[in-house]
Length: 537
Image (cartoon, rainbow, N blue to C red; front, top):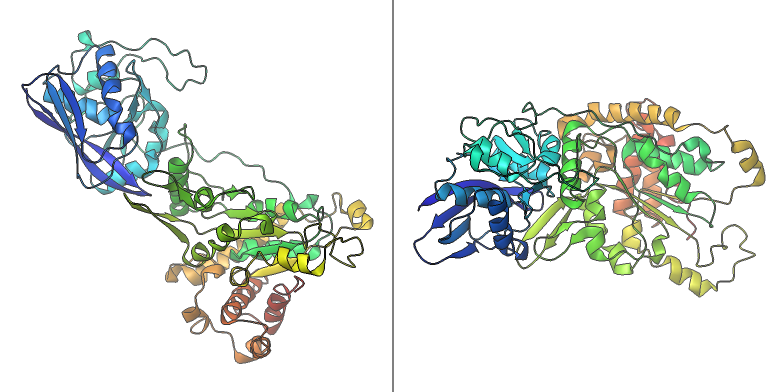
């Protein structure tokens, strides 16, 4: 009886830390203990792992088995440690040769079948950064793991395959019966691969780190929106510069239609952004087969009853990402914005400025990226009829102020574009069918504007005009004073704050990029001011 070590990864947010899974077999009566800050799922793994090993033909030692997850001060959660624990225990018993620096990331079923786990992409990224290139996962997670450059991934269907590939006697091993699950989440095990040097062989996944390209996407077309010239212009500017947008108008005016068409105007994500977005969805979404990076900007539209934990992230133990982080590099759409809890929606102010969400818990703190475009849609009052002449509105002035007042001034000050979306007339509706400009035409102009921004901002480590800070806007990217004169007058009247001044300049730069000019003109500043003042006070 002896000692052995394998490797796994513990995730805290998107950051992963290497975990040494140490197993020691003593001379005393049977016992199985796991130490090193395991959570409930890990503590419950003991009987599951004994059954999985026994049903795979290679039972764990009947002696006292102690498993230590090092570093002991780092919280460990979830079932992705299952495979590493079993391998270390069998190596300590001398049943399997040592696997060196191979990392094992998979859950085990009672029959020995491997099962998928969340967070494979960020876990493999952490392992490769730490110099652990050989990764063993469930075969349904293998394509996702192979998206990480430098990873040598082997995917298997059951524990028996992993043990045989690691050098165990194949005559002793048993494989689970064919799965009855029609989804194929737990497939039957085929013949195992031959063992490879330093650990399990290549399994059924090519180790070149390649994956299929992104699937084709079909977004709603902007041509379906009738009328709304100001709304269409604001949407194009928001897409071109990454700006936040507020739309206020009566029910049925097209606010939701416009918001749903914003992702279709955005260009595909670049490699680093796509890797970041895919890692968030790997951790925050369901465990599933993922064969390619997420290339389309995500779109999240939580209901107005959403809790703070659901919007920003939370949960017991180490918190998971919320809708704000899942919208990273994409769009977070809050329909009926005044109906959201005041505290929840006001908490958006911090990620709007910093581009990340920090969640503190007793056991750990997690930081998730959250650089999204915020789109707010609101009725002008509870009944929604106070727009225009407001003849049909049944709300008192106090009720109207109270309703729209749920959107705080500091939050609205961070929204670059604030427009009214009026009712669509019958003439606009009748003539709009098929006559409006389609998404493809607008997206081409957006792509050209994004290209101009990339040329100007890449050396500064920025992507869009929405990320421009005060130092740049009052330094190398400051327009001539003759151009900014309207801003000075607006600030003197008290109609614009210092933050508002900065955001108008950002929009002016985007307007210049859309028109193909190298610097904003006074008309760009006037238009940016106009598109920030269309919401009735």
